[in-house]
Length: 468
Ligand SMILES: *[C@@H]1O[C@H](CO)[C@@H](O)[C@H](O)[C@H]1NC(C)=O
Ligand SMILES: *[C@@H]1O[C@H](CO)[C@@H](O)[C@H](O)[C@H]1NC(C)=O
Ligand SMILES: *[C@@H]1O[C@H](CO)[C@@H](O)[C@H](O)[C@H]1NC(C)=O
Ligand SMILES: *[C@@H]1O[C@H](CO)[C@@H](O)[C@H](O)[C@H]1NC(C)=O
Ligand SMILES: *[C@@H]1O[C@H](CO)[C@@H](O)[C@H](O)[C@H]1NC(C)=O
Ligand SMILES: *[C@@H]1O[C@H](CO)[C@@H](O)[C@H](O)[C@H]1NC(C)=O
Image 1: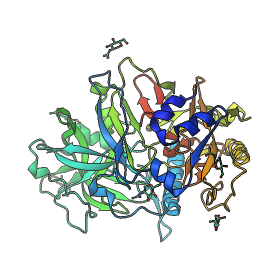
Image 2: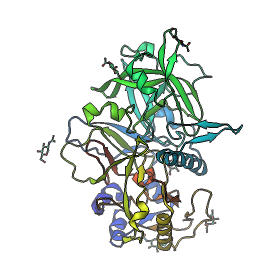
Image 3: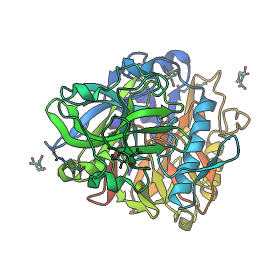
């Protein structure tokens, strides 16, 4: 089923007429010139997101791109890394997730050639979407990166000096100023449960033996601190009590300005699993098309109004519950289904908020690239870069005609990726090829403007187009 032209019209009224005219043939004409681009990508932040709210027990918070006018002032400034740098980090994350999901031992070699086993979280320096939550009593605002590729949440905590914590714009979270903060003790079951993977043990650094957690991410960033419980406030009046998280006392790596990380994976340590009693193990988000609009992160599923969602079965990764896996059945370009044997997709696709570019099995990517290039033959192709091989030079074109790219999932539902924000990243087709034996990854460019509902309770993932 296609997303309705009317919906596109409402969202992108600046080129409504063009879009309506173009879609019949599976193509959308979009402006490329700087004047019209500034219409579709305003420099001020605007909010156009709508979480469906038939369930009074759903809680949503605004979500923004880390760089751009919608980011909280605490993390906005400081400059966006170059596209090449973002893609380099993205590749590292993708490789780590695929290896971990396929059960291969993940090791990284440090400069001295020593292998470091990394059992946890994918690289975090590619994460791009942030939410602001309240932590403690009284609640203080903390802006954290969202990550469906890891589970344990953490923020930097006092006492922590500049050699142990990286500079962040908000004041460090101060456990001693909160009446609801409690460290987890070494002997607690919650601490024993962490032993499996989080390097948990006892720390006596405060004089009392407390539960220590440690996480090493795929890019070798680390956080170590005290496993703790605290009240997490989503919005006034909606709080998660006794939320287990890491109070980070030593961080090392390329962290940058934000206050911590919110783990949304499927394992027991994640916010989603911890709140399953209240929210049914369901959450959703909408990633906005540009950095100048906001989306949302919501806990819980719509109770009975799932109209507008297209569902496909959710599987968990055979190697662990962190990752969310769906199965692709086909890909279409410009309304024409590509000739890809369904067996190509059998390793499954991990759907991830933090990976940027979608990685497809090679056979599928080759078919997509051929069809896409053929539909885009009016535009000069740039020489392939190290990371992406289908980039265009749109200089001198006042508009571009981009074919609709659609993904068909197990169960037969088809989603049309938002055109162009869900297909092109800075003029490049936001897909790459990868090994045919491993799971692929559906990256966050493809997910833009959809409400993506991860519902472990119901065993499905839903996509609702035009949600932000
Ligand atoms: C469920 O749907 C029915 C009919 O569509 C509606 O009347 C009812 O209010 C909905 N329930 C909730 C909790 O919104
Ligand atoms: C926001 O996005 C636009 C368009 O992609 C980009 O040119 C701009 O640099 C971004 N803003 C920041 C602060 O990164
Ligand atoms: C911390 O203190 C506990 C209890 O006094 C002791 O058993 C443990 O060995 C100490 N751990 C370290 C790392 O010093
Ligand atoms: C908080 O959660 C931990 C497990 O995560 C549990 O052991 C403890 O009893 C809970 N405390 C309260 C006050 O609910
Ligand atoms: C893009 O095209 C313009 C106009 O044809 C040309 O001047 C420019 O050098 C090209 N840019 C690249 C990166 O090839
Ligand atoms: C798109 O641009 C071309 C020239 O680059 C022009 O001929 C055409 O009319 C434009 N189409 C629309 C729908 O604006």
